[in-house]
Length: 183
Ligand code: AMP
Image (cartoon, rainbow, N blue to C red):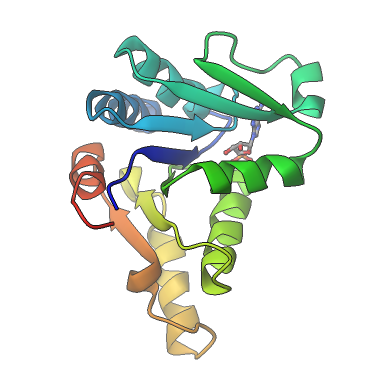
């Protein structure tokens, strides 16, 4: 299967190092130029805003899936191709997973890691089987990678980490992976 729709999970904050926003924007632009569609949390701040705005600037298409609660906080992006409002966070995450062919994780906080681990768990349980890519900008996820290896070494995982997640250091590398046929 070729990847057409990509769920993007990333921070609602920009992070301290300028590379986080810059690399996110490069990835957003690259996805749009590759004619792939972005589905994400619908926010306009931080890394979320950077990737969505960069994709839109390259005439890409972006769907936001936002729970009503967050709309009331008025943090949603108003210039998206499509905005889907869900009743709660659970519906939102379910829809994000259903609509995508693959997921990309960028630097972020609790929300980002929650989405990563829920996707991994659902893959493990065969609820779905979506390829997961991590953009490891500035080595942000090095410790996570080490911890995943520890989980594998200590016998808590059902399959090798590398079967579940592809780590990429740059947006260029990640785009190359996304356009590989056969995922
Ligand atoms: P965090 O990593 O804690 O900043 O949370 C980011 C993740 O949570 C994103 O991938 C979104 O799905 C969700 N999220 C957090 N804040 C917002 C927001 N203001 N608007 C939409 N989604 C958000």
